[in-house]
Image 1 (cartoon, helix red, strand yellow):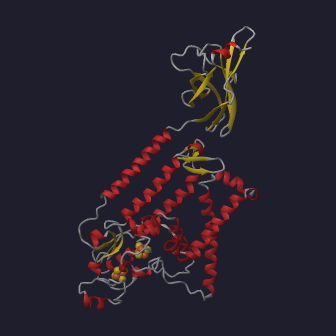
Image 2 (cartoon, rainbow, N blue to C red):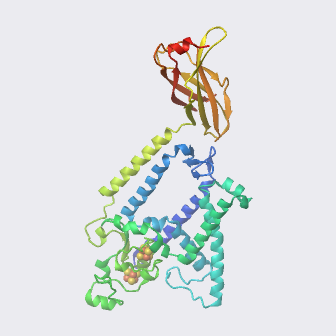
Image 3 (cartoon, rainbow, N blue to C red):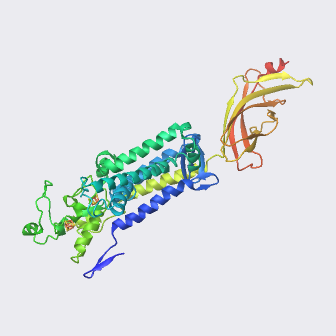
Amino acid sequence: MSEEIKGFKIPTAWRIKRYYFFILLTIMALVLPWIEVNGSHFFLLSFDKLKLHLGFVQFDMQELYLLPFLLMMLFLGIFGMTVMGGRVFCGWICPQTIFRVIYRDVIETKLLKLRKRIKNKQLEPDMSIAQNKIKRAVAILLWVVLSFVASANLIWFFVPPEDFFAYMSDPFEHMILLGTLVSSALFLIYDIVFLQEDYCIYVCPYSRIQSVLYDENTVMALYNTNRGGHIYNSDKEKVFTKQKDLQAVEAHAECTACESCVTVCPTHIDIRKGLQLECINCLECVDACTVVMGKLGKPSLVTWSSEYEIIDKKGKTKYFRPKIIAYIVLLIGIAVAMIIMGSKKENMLLNINKENRLYSVHKESDGRVVVENAYEFLLQNTQNKTLNFYFEVILPQGLKGTLEIEKPKDSFDVTPDVKKKKIVVLRTYDKLADDSRHDTIIPITIRAYAVGHEGEIEVLRESTFTYPREDILREAK
Ligand code: SF4
Ligand code: SF4
């Protein structure tokens, strides 16, 4: 797609590359919520089912220790990306930018011809013309439809599509979901149609923090003052509007003062003024100047490069500098920690609480003394199918005797995601301790498992069995 003018090869426009990337991101965002592996989604934070699905593995809300790792990775990733490539997130990934391209460039410009050219984003349509008013209404109507699709798509990462459509078949029974859908769609309509790039300039908090992350090697859209000349003075005042005036001061200045890089800018700034908070790194100005200078057989005066390389002429941009390496090491470290923690995920959940009464002691008809301890087990089946569970009691090594499970006698079924309470009674006829003054606390281990899935779906929990002092055993009736 690159073309050659006067022997100078004009590279493929960044705009086209961004469009392909936007299409890829949009397809991924729309398709990912529909993909399920063994009933699990790639990413789903379900508040109604208290589940986190991550990488097609389900985690229970008690296991949400993974969420801080994800947030750390997200923030570190964006910070690292900013140190390396400026507001590259804004230009290439941010939904706001993608939506504005769809609304302004695709709907208003290409489809309805309400705007004249994609290359002039600053020229607003003449809204006194009746035909333009109709076109604007049609554009807004189309965007209303797309806003609802985009809002639904966002919700699918919190309410999976299968549940979303089931709930929406009876919307007034699910007012919170309906309210979220409508309010986020209304926000998108206001944001994209009326607020426009003012969101990026005044509302988005990211634009406030980005400048402190920049260094001389940060890659961004940059005007080459060494080649182009100084259009603005040191007080950021525009001093030249014509090339001949500029060349009277700087004879070598190549900037033609055509302002193609200015009119194309969606945030209405002049890149020749230097780094500005409003720049979203969309690289449209790079494309514009590439065409202008390409026609003269020269490379663009505005490039995606660093001050280190273009302005200070110190050499090639240093991509792998200590700051970037630190971000990469931190990100890898957190990812490894998350994978290790995730792999230790338990395939069932079990909480054990001992009853307030320490024990009960009584004599059986055959004269044997039996000691019982009771517990409350709270068990949750985190699998997708109903499973049959039971327990085993493990006594400390070297302790003679046995502990029997008096209750429940048999294994029992637990349906997925249901927390089941079970009163468990352990008993012994054996003399587990011999203390005349104190009760003896014996550490025990409970192995709970899904019958038929031993070794795979099982957990170990530490607890205690209280054995009474001798006089209590003697007095047992
Ligand atoms: S100056 Fe304007 S056109 Fe150039 S990258 Fe920044 S926002 Fe885009
Ligand atoms: S597009 Fe290039 S030549 Fe034209 S004004 Fe901008 S920097 Fe100068």
